[in-house]
Length: 198
Image 1: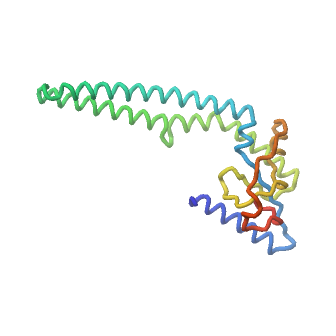
Image 2: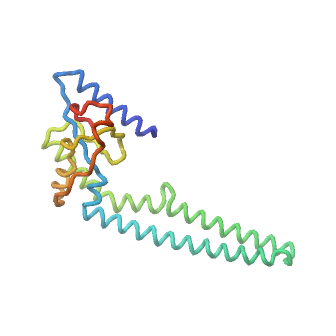
Image 3: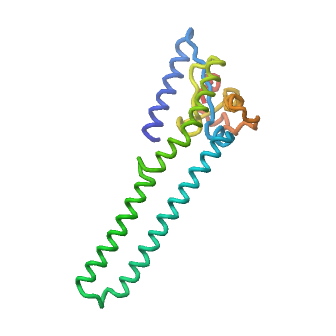
């Protein structure tokens, strides 16, 4: 389990303990599936399509540079033995420069603070804020203390469909009703379903 997931699972466990041991302070907890929401929200689909197009464009650019490098390298290997030493040094430096340029561009496009990360922030942020607002509205209207995301942020050993708020969030976003995603069978759960933690 990743450290981040472990910390979040510890938080969930603490909530379970608190809600089960303090009778007068019962917690109301629900869960959502943001992956399901993002697949059905037109703005999210459109934003992802824009990102995919950018990634494809950038990858094509890098692939072309790699192909050029491979051609230059093959050509050099064929002529290497007949080249004077100074010419070999120059050719090898040229190949090294081409390789560095590819690495720099890949980092610029796909690095931690690269173009993709910035575009994700720019393109996806309005969508994420809209979804977050819908989640907060559902939480306030339903008087929920906690709403967890089961799409990968928290390890969910069991999820009872009656606590699934995904469709309520979709309703807030005016997305048509859909079949609730499948859940893990209760027999695999080490928890008490009655606690409402999934």
